[in-house]
Amino acid sequence: MLEVSVAAISLRDPEEVVAAGLADTFGLQGATLTDISFAYQNVTLDMWQVVRNYLDRVDIQALTADEQLSYEIYSWQVDQALAMRPFLHYDYQATYFLTGVPPETERFFSDLHPLESRADALDYLTRLALVDEKIRQLIANLKVMEGQGVIEPAATMGIAIDVHRGVMNSAISSNPYYSRFSNRLAAIPGISASEITELRSRARTIVENQISPAYSALVDFMVEQLGRAPAAIGVGQFPAGEAYYRERLRYHTTTSMSPEQIHELGLREVARVQTELREKFGLLGYPRGETLARSFGRVATDGGSTRSSNAVDVFVALIDDAEIRMQALFNRLPEAEVVVRGDNYGGFYIGPSLDGSRPGTFYASTSANQPTYLMPTLAYHEAMPGHHMQIALAQESELPLFRRIAIFNGYVEGWGLYAERLAYDSGWYASDPYGDLGRLYFENLRAVRLVVDTGIHYYGWSFDRAVTYFQDNVGSSRGAAESNIARYSIYTGQATAYMVGMLKLLELRDRVQAALGDGFTMAGFHTLVLEEGPMPLDILERRVDSEITGAAAWSLRQ
View 1: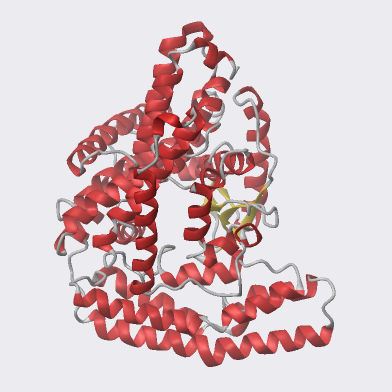
View 2: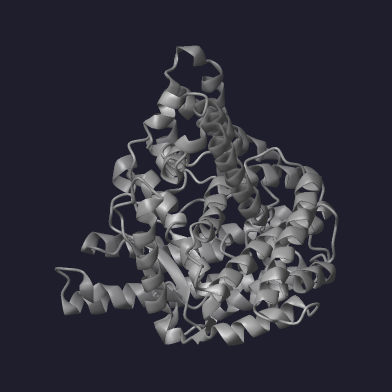
Protein backbone atom coordinates (compact mmCIF):
# COMPACT_ATOMS: atom_id res chain seq x y z
CA MET A 1 0.00 0.00 0.00
CA LEU A 2 2.84 2.41 0.80
CA GLU A 3 4.43 2.08 -2.64
CA VAL A 4 1.04 2.35 -4.34
CA SER A 5 0.17 5.55 -2.48
CA VAL A 6 3.64 6.99 -3.10
CA ALA A 7 3.19 6.45 -6.84
CA ALA A 8 -0.34 7.88 -6.88
CA ILE A 9 0.59 11.02 -4.96
CA SER A 10 3.89 11.47 -6.81
CA LEU A 11 2.00 11.47 -10.11
CA ARG A 12 0.16 14.56 -8.86
CA ASP A 13 3.44 16.39 -9.53
CA PRO A 14 4.52 15.25 -13.01
CA GLU A 15 7.35 17.79 -13.19
CA GLU A 16 8.99 16.27 -10.13
CA VAL A 17 8.45 12.76 -11.50
CA VAL A 18 10.16 13.68 -14.78
CA ALA A 19 13.00 15.54 -13.04
CA ALA A 20 13.67 12.57 -10.76
CA GLY A 21 13.81 10.15 -13.68
CA LEU A 22 10.77 8.22 -12.45
CA ALA A 23 8.38 8.67 -15.38
CA ASP A 24 8.65 5.04 -16.46
CA THR A 25 8.71 3.71 -12.89
CA PHE A 26 5.45 5.44 -12.03
CA GLY A 27 3.88 5.03 -15.47
CA LEU A 28 3.50 8.73 -16.17
CA GLN A 29 1.12 9.26 -19.09
CA GLY A 30 1.38 12.26 -21.39
CA ALA A 31 3.63 15.30 -21.38
CA THR A 32 2.06 17.57 -18.79
CA LEU A 33 3.05 20.21 -16.27
CA THR A 34 2.06 20.24 -12.61
CA ASP A 35 -1.33 21.76 -11.88
CA ILE A 36 -0.83 24.40 -9.17
CA SER A 37 -4.46 25.44 -8.67
CA PHE A 38 -5.76 25.35 -5.12
CA ALA A 39 -8.59 23.04 -6.18
CA TYR A 40 -6.04 20.52 -7.45
CA GLN A 41 -3.96 20.86 -4.28
CA ASN A 42 -7.01 20.15 -2.14
CA VAL A 43 -7.69 16.95 -4.07
CA THR A 44 -4.10 15.91 -3.39
CA LEU A 45 -4.65 16.57 0.30
CA ASP A 46 -7.77 14.41 0.17
CA MET A 47 -5.57 11.62 -1.17
CA TRP A 48 -3.17 12.12 1.72
CA GLN A 49 -6.12 11.78 4.09
CA VAL A 50 -7.08 8.46 2.52
CA VAL A 51 -3.53 7.26 3.15
CA ARG A 52 -3.71 8.48 6.75
CA ASN A 53 -6.94 6.57 7.28
CA TYR A 54 -5.30 3.43 5.93
CA LEU A 55 -2.23 3.85 8.14
CA ASP A 56 -4.45 4.20 11.20
CA ARG A 57 -5.77 0.69 10.55
CA VAL A 58 -2.36 -0.96 10.24
CA ASP A 59 -1.33 -3.35 13.02
CA ILE A 60 2.11 -1.92 13.68
CA GLN A 61 3.13 -4.80 15.93
CA ALA A 62 2.65 -7.22 13.04
CA LEU A 63 5.28 -5.41 10.96
CA THR A 64 8.96 -6.28 10.80
CA ALA A 65 11.48 -3.82 12.25
CA ASP A 66 12.27 -2.47 8.78
CA GLU A 67 8.58 -2.13 7.97
CA GLN A 68 7.97 -0.32 11.24
CA LEU A 69 10.67 2.21 10.40
CA SER A 70 9.14 2.76 6.96
CA TYR A 71 5.72 3.12 8.58
CA GLU A 72 7.04 5.71 11.04
CA ILE A 73 8.80 7.75 8.35
CA TYR A 74 5.85 7.68 5.97
CA SER A 75 3.41 8.55 8.76
CA TRP A 76 5.50 11.62 9.49
CA GLN A 77 5.33 12.66 5.83
CA VAL A 78 1.58 12.11 5.68
CA ASP A 79 0.91 14.04 8.88
CA GLN A 80 3.11 16.92 7.76
CA ALA A 81 1.31 17.16 4.42
CA LEU A 82 -2.08 17.22 6.14
CA ALA A 83 -0.91 19.76 8.71
CA MET A 84 -0.50 22.26 5.88
CA ARG A 85 -4.13 22.10 4.73
CA PRO A 86 -5.11 25.26 6.68
CA PHE A 87 -2.12 27.10 5.21
CA LEU A 88 -2.32 26.46 1.46
CA HIS A 89 -2.49 30.21 0.83
CA TYR A 90 0.59 31.15 2.84
CA ASP A 91 3.53 30.14 0.64
CA TYR A 92 4.69 32.97 -1.62
CA GLN A 93 4.23 31.51 -5.09
CA ALA A 94 5.44 34.28 -7.40
CA THR A 95 8.69 34.97 -5.61
CA TYR A 96 12.02 35.15 -7.43
CA PHE A 97 13.71 32.63 -5.14
CA LEU A 98 14.13 28.95 -6.06
CA THR A 99 10.81 28.01 -4.46
CA GLY A 100 8.72 30.38 -6.59
CA VAL A 101 6.63 28.97 -9.44
CA PRO A 102 8.45 30.96 -12.18
CA PRO A 103 12.02 29.99 -11.18
CA GLU A 104 11.00 26.38 -10.47
CA THR A 105 9.40 26.13 -13.91
CA GLU A 106 12.35 27.81 -15.61
CA ARG A 107 14.82 25.40 -14.01
CA PHE A 108 12.66 22.43 -14.95
CA PHE A 109 13.13 23.35 -18.61
CA SER A 110 16.66 24.74 -18.44
CA ASP A 111 18.22 21.96 -16.33
CA LEU A 112 15.97 19.04 -15.47
CA HIS A 113 13.83 18.04 -18.45
CA PRO A 114 15.47 15.11 -20.28
CA LEU A 115 16.71 15.83 -23.79
CA GLU A 116 18.26 12.56 -24.89
CA SER A 117 15.97 11.58 -27.78
CA ARG A 118 13.54 12.88 -30.39
CA ALA A 119 10.69 11.84 -28.09
CA ASP A 120 12.19 13.92 -25.27
CA ALA A 121 12.40 16.94 -27.57
CA LEU A 122 8.77 16.58 -28.63
CA ASP A 123 7.67 16.16 -25.00
CA TYR A 124 9.64 19.29 -24.18
CA LEU A 125 7.70 21.28 -26.78
CA THR A 126 4.38 19.86 -25.60
CA ARG A 127 5.13 20.92 -22.04
CA LEU A 128 6.52 24.26 -23.18
CA ALA A 129 3.16 25.08 -24.73
CA LEU A 130 1.56 24.64 -21.28
CA VAL A 131 3.71 27.18 -19.45
CA ASP A 132 1.38 30.09 -20.20
CA GLU A 133 -1.53 28.22 -18.60
CA LYS A 134 0.59 27.58 -15.52
CA ILE A 135 1.40 31.28 -15.24
CA ARG A 136 -2.31 32.07 -15.53
CA GLN A 137 -2.95 29.62 -12.68
CA LEU A 138 -0.31 31.46 -10.68
CA ILE A 139 -2.03 34.81 -11.21
CA ALA A 140 -5.34 33.27 -10.14
CA ASN A 141 -3.66 31.88 -7.02
CA LEU A 142 -2.25 35.29 -6.12
CA LYS A 143 -5.74 36.74 -6.25
CA VAL A 144 -7.10 34.00 -3.99
CA MET A 145 -4.23 34.50 -1.55
CA GLU A 146 -4.89 38.21 -1.36
CA GLY A 147 -8.51 37.42 -0.59
CA GLN A 148 -7.22 35.39 2.36
CA GLY A 149 -5.12 38.32 3.55
CA VAL A 150 -1.74 37.11 2.25
CA ILE A 151 0.43 39.20 -0.09
CA GLU A 152 4.17 38.83 -0.55
CA PRO A 153 6.07 41.62 1.26
CA ALA A 154 6.91 44.67 -0.82
CA ALA A 155 10.63 44.27 -0.12
CA THR A 156 10.81 41.01 -2.05
CA MET A 157 7.95 41.50 -4.49
CA GLY A 158 9.83 44.37 -6.09
CA ILE A 159 12.81 42.08 -6.66
CA ALA A 160 10.55 39.39 -8.11
CA ILE A 161 9.00 41.85 -10.55
CA ASP A 162 12.43 42.84 -11.85
CA VAL A 163 13.54 39.20 -12.18
CA HIS A 164 10.39 38.10 -14.02
CA ARG A 165 10.59 41.15 -16.27
CA GLY A 166 14.17 40.18 -17.08
CA VAL A 167 13.07 36.71 -18.21
CA MET A 168 10.24 38.23 -20.23
CA ASN A 169 12.58 40.63 -22.04
CA SER A 170 15.60 38.33 -22.40
CA ALA A 171 17.10 37.66 -25.80
CA ILE A 172 15.86 34.36 -27.19
CA SER A 173 19.41 32.94 -27.15
CA SER A 174 19.58 33.34 -23.36
CA ASN A 175 15.94 32.67 -22.49
CA PRO A 176 15.75 29.80 -19.95
CA TYR A 177 12.89 28.19 -21.84
CA TYR A 178 14.80 28.14 -25.13
CA SER A 179 18.59 28.26 -24.81
CA ARG A 180 19.34 24.77 -23.47
CA PHE A 181 16.79 23.20 -25.78
CA SER A 182 18.31 24.91 -28.79
CA ASN A 183 21.88 24.05 -27.82
CA ARG A 184 21.12 20.44 -26.97
CA LEU A 185 19.30 19.43 -30.16
CA ALA A 186 22.45 18.88 -32.20
CA ALA A 187 23.65 16.25 -29.69
CA ILE A 188 20.48 14.17 -29.91
CA PRO A 189 21.09 11.17 -32.18
CA GLY A 190 18.96 10.73 -35.27
CA ILE A 191 17.70 14.30 -35.62
CA SER A 192 18.46 15.92 -38.97
CA ALA A 193 19.53 19.51 -39.51
CA SER A 194 16.14 20.37 -41.00
CA GLU A 195 14.37 18.88 -37.97
CA ILE A 196 16.58 20.90 -35.65
CA THR A 197 15.62 24.08 -37.49
CA GLU A 198 11.94 23.19 -37.24
CA LEU A 199 12.11 22.31 -33.54
CA ARG A 200 13.96 25.51 -32.72
CA SER A 201 11.39 27.51 -34.66
CA ARG A 202 8.53 25.87 -32.77
CA ALA A 203 10.17 26.54 -29.42
CA ARG A 204 10.88 30.16 -30.29
CA THR A 205 7.28 30.69 -31.41
CA ILE A 206 5.95 29.31 -28.12
CA VAL A 207 8.31 31.46 -26.06
CA GLU A 208 7.56 34.65 -27.97
CA ASN A 209 3.82 34.20 -28.55
CA GLN A 210 2.75 32.40 -25.37
CA ILE A 211 5.27 32.48 -22.54
CA SER A 212 6.47 36.08 -22.81
CA PRO A 213 2.89 37.46 -22.90
CA ALA A 214 2.04 35.30 -19.87
CA TYR A 215 5.03 36.71 -17.99
CA SER A 216 3.93 40.19 -19.04
CA ALA A 217 0.50 39.55 -17.52
CA LEU A 218 2.13 38.28 -14.33
CA VAL A 219 4.37 41.33 -14.07
CA ASP A 220 1.45 43.68 -14.71
CA PHE A 221 -0.58 42.06 -11.93
CA MET A 222 2.32 42.11 -9.48
CA VAL A 223 3.06 45.77 -10.23
CA GLU A 224 -0.58 46.55 -9.49
CA GLN A 225 -0.52 44.42 -6.31
CA LEU A 226 2.75 45.96 -5.13
CA GLY A 227 0.85 49.04 -4.03
CA ARG A 228 -1.02 46.86 -1.51
CA ALA A 229 1.96 44.76 -0.41
CA PRO A 230 2.92 44.99 3.27
CA ALA A 231 6.08 46.65 4.53
CA ALA A 232 6.38 44.02 7.27
CA ILE A 233 8.27 40.90 6.18
CA GLY A 234 7.28 38.23 8.71
CA VAL A 235 4.42 35.76 8.31
CA GLY A 236 3.30 36.57 11.83
CA GLN A 237 1.44 39.56 10.40
CA PHE A 238 -1.05 37.33 8.55
CA PRO A 239 -4.12 35.58 9.98
CA ALA A 240 -2.93 32.37 11.68
CA GLY A 241 0.61 33.40 10.77
CA GLU A 242 2.11 32.17 14.03
CA ALA A 243 0.52 28.74 13.66
CA TYR A 244 1.78 28.58 10.07
CA TYR A 245 5.31 29.46 11.20
CA ARG A 246 5.32 26.75 13.86
CA GLU A 247 4.32 24.21 11.20
CA ARG A 248 7.06 25.45 8.89
CA LEU A 249 9.63 25.04 11.65
CA ARG A 250 8.45 21.50 12.31
CA TYR A 251 8.59 20.72 8.60
CA HIS A 252 12.07 22.13 8.03
CA THR A 253 13.81 21.12 11.28
CA THR A 254 11.86 17.84 11.60
CA THR A 255 11.83 18.43 15.36
CA SER A 256 9.33 19.82 17.85
CA MET A 257 11.50 22.82 18.74
CA SER A 258 9.56 26.03 19.36
CA PRO A 259 10.42 29.43 17.84
CA GLU A 260 11.62 30.59 21.27
CA GLN A 261 13.93 27.59 21.65
CA ILE A 262 15.38 28.06 18.18
CA HIS A 263 15.96 31.77 18.76
CA GLU A 264 17.79 31.14 22.04
CA LEU A 265 19.82 28.35 20.44
CA GLY A 266 20.84 30.77 17.73
CA LEU A 267 22.02 33.39 20.19
CA ARG A 268 24.12 30.80 22.04
CA GLU A 269 25.62 29.44 18.84
CA VAL A 270 26.46 32.91 17.51
CA ALA A 271 28.34 33.63 20.73
CA ARG A 272 30.18 30.29 20.59
CA VAL A 273 31.26 30.50 16.96
CA GLN A 274 32.28 34.14 17.18
CA THR A 275 34.48 33.37 20.19
CA GLU A 276 36.25 30.75 18.09
CA LEU A 277 36.53 33.18 15.20
CA ARG A 278 38.15 35.85 17.39
CA GLU A 279 40.67 33.31 18.67
CA LYS A 280 41.66 32.29 15.16
CA PHE A 281 41.82 35.86 13.92
CA GLY A 282 44.25 36.47 16.79
CA LEU A 283 46.46 33.59 15.71
CA LEU A 284 46.88 35.36 12.36
CA GLY A 285 47.83 38.58 14.13
CA TYR A 286 44.65 40.46 13.28
CA PRO A 287 43.80 43.34 15.66
CA ARG A 288 41.51 42.48 18.53
CA GLY A 289 38.16 44.22 18.70
CA GLU A 290 37.76 45.07 15.03
CA THR A 291 34.52 44.28 13.24
CA LEU A 292 33.90 40.93 11.63
CA ALA A 293 33.64 42.69 8.30
CA ARG A 294 37.13 44.11 8.65
CA SER A 295 38.65 40.83 9.82
CA PHE A 296 37.02 38.84 7.02
CA GLY A 297 38.21 41.51 4.61
CA ARG A 298 41.74 40.68 5.71
CA VAL A 299 41.05 36.95 5.26
CA ALA A 300 39.76 37.56 1.74
CA THR A 301 42.92 39.50 0.87
CA ASP A 302 45.39 37.19 2.58
CA GLY A 303 43.66 34.01 1.40
CA GLY A 304 43.63 35.13 -2.23
CA SER A 305 40.93 34.95 -4.86
CA THR A 306 40.06 32.52 -7.63
CA ARG A 307 39.24 33.76 -11.10
CA SER A 308 35.72 32.99 -12.23
CA SER A 309 37.09 31.12 -15.24
CA ASN A 310 39.04 28.79 -12.92
CA ALA A 311 36.33 28.23 -10.30
CA VAL A 312 34.98 24.98 -11.74
CA ASP A 313 38.46 23.43 -11.96
CA VAL A 314 39.26 24.42 -8.37
CA PHE A 315 36.02 22.89 -7.10
CA VAL A 316 36.66 19.69 -9.06
CA ALA A 317 40.12 19.40 -7.48
CA LEU A 318 38.70 19.98 -4.00
CA ILE A 319 36.06 17.28 -4.50
CA ASP A 320 38.60 14.80 -5.90
CA ASP A 321 40.83 15.38 -2.87
CA ALA A 322 37.86 14.99 -0.51
CA GLU A 323 36.95 11.63 -2.02
CA ILE A 324 40.45 10.35 -1.31
CA ARG A 325 40.35 11.58 2.29
CA MET A 326 36.87 10.11 2.80
CA GLN A 327 38.10 6.53 2.39
CA ALA A 328 39.01 6.45 6.08
CA LEU A 329 35.72 7.96 7.21
CA PHE A 330 33.12 5.94 5.30
CA ASN A 331 32.58 2.28 4.59
CA ARG A 332 31.18 3.03 1.15
CA LEU A 333 31.08 5.93 -1.28
CA PRO A 334 28.35 6.40 -3.90
CA GLU A 335 28.83 5.09 -7.41
CA ALA A 336 27.09 8.08 -9.02
CA GLU A 337 29.48 10.81 -10.03
CA VAL A 338 29.12 14.44 -9.09
CA VAL A 339 29.90 17.07 -11.71
CA VAL A 340 30.53 20.77 -11.25
CA ARG A 341 28.74 23.19 -13.54
CA GLY A 342 29.23 26.94 -13.72
CA ASP A 343 26.18 29.07 -12.98
CA ASN A 344 25.45 32.78 -12.62
CA TYR A 345 24.24 32.28 -9.06
CA GLY A 346 25.67 28.96 -7.94
CA GLY A 347 26.09 27.56 -4.47
CA PHE A 348 23.57 24.72 -4.70
CA TYR A 349 23.30 21.04 -5.59
CA ILE A 350 20.74 18.99 -7.54
CA GLY A 351 20.86 15.23 -7.06
CA PRO A 352 21.18 12.63 -9.82
CA SER A 353 18.10 11.28 -11.53
CA LEU A 354 17.19 7.77 -10.45
CA ASP A 355 17.27 6.49 -14.03
CA GLY A 356 20.93 7.49 -14.33
CA SER A 357 20.35 9.99 -17.13
CA ARG A 358 21.55 12.98 -15.11
CA PRO A 359 24.49 13.05 -12.67
CA GLY A 360 24.50 14.81 -9.34
CA THR A 361 25.42 18.41 -10.07
CA PHE A 362 27.06 21.08 -7.92
CA TYR A 363 26.30 24.47 -9.45
CA ALA A 364 29.23 26.77 -8.75
CA SER A 365 29.09 30.53 -9.11
CA THR A 366 31.13 31.70 -12.10
CA SER A 367 29.73 35.21 -12.43
CA ALA A 368 32.69 36.83 -10.65
CA ASN A 369 36.00 36.07 -8.97
CA GLN A 370 35.49 34.58 -5.52
CA PRO A 371 37.46 34.44 -2.27
CA THR A 372 39.43 31.22 -2.24
CA TYR A 373 39.00 30.74 1.52
CA LEU A 374 35.28 30.00 1.09
CA MET A 375 35.64 27.38 -1.63
CA PRO A 376 36.66 24.25 0.34
CA THR A 377 33.66 24.48 2.65
CA LEU A 378 31.29 25.01 -0.28
CA ALA A 379 32.67 21.92 -1.99
CA TYR A 380 32.37 19.81 1.16
CA HIS A 381 28.81 20.95 1.86
CA GLU A 382 27.35 20.68 -1.62
CA ALA A 383 29.27 17.70 -2.99
CA MET A 384 31.55 15.42 -0.96
CA PRO A 385 31.14 14.48 1.83
CA GLY A 386 27.97 16.58 1.91
CA HIS A 387 24.83 16.52 -0.19
CA HIS A 388 26.05 14.29 -3.01
CA MET A 389 27.39 11.71 -0.59
CA GLN A 390 24.13 11.49 1.36
CA ILE A 391 21.63 11.81 -1.49
CA ALA A 392 23.40 9.52 -3.97
CA LEU A 393 23.94 6.83 -1.34
CA ALA A 394 20.26 6.87 -0.47
CA GLN A 395 19.28 6.62 -4.12
CA GLU A 396 21.60 3.65 -4.66
CA SER A 397 20.30 1.74 -1.64
CA GLU A 398 17.74 -1.05 -1.67
CA LEU A 399 15.36 0.88 0.56
CA PRO A 400 11.73 1.39 -0.46
CA LEU A 401 11.56 4.00 -3.20
CA PHE A 402 9.85 6.66 -1.09
CA ARG A 403 12.72 6.51 1.41
CA ARG A 404 15.37 6.76 -1.30
CA ILE A 405 13.91 9.99 -2.67
CA ALA A 406 12.62 11.63 0.51
CA ILE A 407 13.89 15.07 1.49
CA PHE A 408 13.84 16.00 5.18
CA ASN A 409 15.57 19.35 5.48
CA GLY A 410 16.75 18.92 9.07
CA TYR A 411 18.51 15.72 8.03
CA VAL A 412 19.66 16.77 4.55
CA GLU A 413 20.88 20.28 5.36
CA GLY A 414 22.06 19.13 8.76
CA TRP A 415 24.22 16.54 7.01
CA GLY A 416 25.58 19.20 4.66
CA LEU A 417 26.69 21.36 7.58
CA TYR A 418 27.90 18.29 9.48
CA ALA A 419 30.12 17.50 6.46
CA GLU A 420 31.75 20.91 6.86
CA ARG A 421 32.51 20.20 10.52
CA LEU A 422 33.66 16.66 9.70
CA ALA A 423 36.32 18.08 7.41
CA TYR A 424 37.65 20.17 10.29
CA ASP A 425 37.43 17.33 12.81
CA SER A 426 39.38 15.14 10.38
CA GLY A 427 42.22 17.64 9.95
CA TRP A 428 41.50 18.73 6.39
CA TYR A 429 42.13 22.38 7.28
CA ALA A 430 45.32 21.72 9.25
CA SER A 431 47.50 23.51 6.69
CA ASP A 432 44.84 25.97 5.54
CA PRO A 433 44.00 28.52 8.27
CA TYR A 434 42.11 30.68 5.79
CA GLY A 435 39.98 27.77 4.64
CA ASP A 436 39.23 27.01 8.28
CA LEU A 437 38.03 30.57 8.75
CA GLY A 438 35.83 30.02 5.71
CA ARG A 439 34.32 27.04 7.53
CA LEU A 440 33.66 29.19 10.59
CA TYR A 441 32.24 31.94 8.41
CA PHE A 442 29.59 29.53 7.13
CA GLU A 443 28.95 27.99 10.55
CA ASN A 444 28.45 31.46 12.01
CA LEU A 445 26.13 32.30 9.11
CA ARG A 446 23.96 29.27 9.94
CA ALA A 447 23.83 30.31 13.60
CA VAL A 448 22.81 33.84 12.64
CA ARG A 449 20.05 32.37 10.49
CA LEU A 450 18.43 30.83 13.58
CA VAL A 451 18.22 34.28 15.13
CA VAL A 452 17.00 36.25 12.11
CA ASP A 453 14.49 33.66 10.85
CA THR A 454 12.73 33.53 14.20
CA GLY A 455 13.26 37.25 14.63
CA ILE A 456 11.47 37.98 11.37
CA HIS A 457 8.63 35.51 11.51
CA TYR A 458 7.98 35.12 15.24
CA TYR A 459 9.22 38.29 16.92
CA GLY A 460 8.17 40.62 14.11
CA TRP A 461 11.53 42.13 13.23
CA SER A 462 11.51 44.74 10.49
CA PHE A 463 13.56 44.35 7.33
CA ASP A 464 16.07 46.95 8.54
CA ARG A 465 16.46 45.38 11.98
CA ALA A 466 17.09 41.95 10.47
CA VAL A 467 19.55 43.38 7.94
CA THR A 468 21.46 45.25 10.65
CA TYR A 469 21.72 42.18 12.88
CA PHE A 470 22.86 40.05 9.95
CA GLN A 471 25.41 42.60 8.75
CA ASP A 472 26.89 43.12 12.22
CA ASN A 473 27.09 39.43 13.10
CA VAL A 474 28.14 37.93 9.76
CA GLY A 475 30.45 40.69 8.62
CA SER A 476 28.83 41.04 5.22
CA SER A 477 28.16 44.03 3.02
CA ARG A 478 24.82 45.80 3.25
CA GLY A 479 23.81 44.38 -0.13
CA ALA A 480 24.63 40.80 0.85
CA ALA A 481 22.72 41.22 4.11
CA GLU A 482 19.67 42.52 2.27
CA SER A 483 19.80 39.61 -0.18
CA ASN A 484 19.96 37.07 2.63
CA ILE A 485 17.17 38.64 4.66
CA ALA A 486 15.01 38.74 1.54
CA ARG A 487 15.57 35.00 1.15
CA TYR A 488 14.67 34.20 4.76
CA SER A 489 11.54 36.33 4.60
CA ILE A 490 10.12 34.37 1.66
CA TYR A 491 11.44 30.85 2.39
CA THR A 492 9.83 30.63 5.79
CA GLY A 493 11.69 28.53 8.35
CA GLN A 494 14.04 26.77 5.93
CA ALA A 495 17.11 28.63 7.17
CA THR A 496 16.79 26.99 10.59
CA ALA A 497 17.30 23.44 9.31
CA TYR A 498 21.08 23.61 8.86
CA MET A 499 22.28 24.34 12.38
CA VAL A 500 19.53 22.38 14.12
CA GLY A 501 20.42 19.37 11.99
CA MET A 502 24.18 19.60 12.44
CA LEU A 503 23.96 20.00 16.19
CA LYS A 504 21.70 16.96 16.45
CA LEU A 505 24.10 14.85 14.37
CA LEU A 506 27.05 15.95 16.51
CA GLU A 507 25.06 15.19 19.65
CA LEU A 508 24.25 11.72 18.37
CA ARG A 509 27.88 11.12 17.41
CA ASP A 510 29.02 12.07 20.91
CA ARG A 511 26.33 9.83 22.40
CA VAL A 512 27.40 6.84 20.32
CA GLN A 513 31.07 7.43 21.07
CA ALA A 514 30.40 7.65 24.80
CA ALA A 515 28.42 4.42 24.70
CA LEU A 516 30.95 2.43 22.65
CA GLY A 517 34.24 3.84 23.88
CA ASP A 518 37.12 2.17 22.07
CA GLY A 519 34.64 0.32 19.86
CA PHE A 520 33.57 3.54 18.18
CA THR A 521 34.61 4.28 14.60
CA MET A 522 33.69 7.28 12.51
CA ALA A 523 32.91 5.04 9.53
CA GLY A 524 30.58 2.95 11.65
CA PHE A 525 28.71 6.01 12.90
CA HIS A 526 28.29 7.32 9.37
CA THR A 527 26.92 3.98 8.21
CA LEU A 528 24.44 4.06 11.08
CA VAL A 529 23.24 7.53 10.12
CA LEU A 530 23.21 7.03 6.34
CA GLU A 531 22.26 3.40 5.73
CA GLU A 532 18.52 3.83 6.30
CA GLY A 533 18.26 6.95 4.17
CA PRO A 534 16.94 10.37 5.16
CA MET A 535 14.42 10.62 7.97
CA PRO A 536 13.10 13.19 10.46
CA LEU A 537 15.65 13.97 13.17
CA ASP A 538 13.30 12.93 15.96
CA ILE A 539 13.00 9.48 14.36
CA LEU A 540 16.75 9.28 13.72
CA GLU A 541 17.44 10.04 17.37
CA ARG A 542 15.13 7.27 18.57
CA ARG A 543 16.73 4.86 16.11
CA VAL A 544 20.27 5.71 17.22
CA ASP A 545 19.34 5.35 20.88
CA SER A 546 17.89 1.94 20.11
CA GLU A 547 20.88 0.81 18.05
CA ILE A 548 23.63 1.75 20.50
CA THR A 549 22.14 -0.52 23.14
CA GLY A 550 23.13 -3.55 21.05
CA ALA A 551 26.85 -4.07 20.54
CA ALA A 552 26.17 -6.87 18.08
CA ALA A 553 24.10 -4.62 15.84
CA TRP A 554 26.80 -1.97 15.97
CA SER A 555 29.61 -4.39 15.19
CA LEU A 556 27.98 -5.18 11.85
CA ARG A 557 28.75 -1.64 10.70
CA GLN A 558 32.48 -1.75 11.24
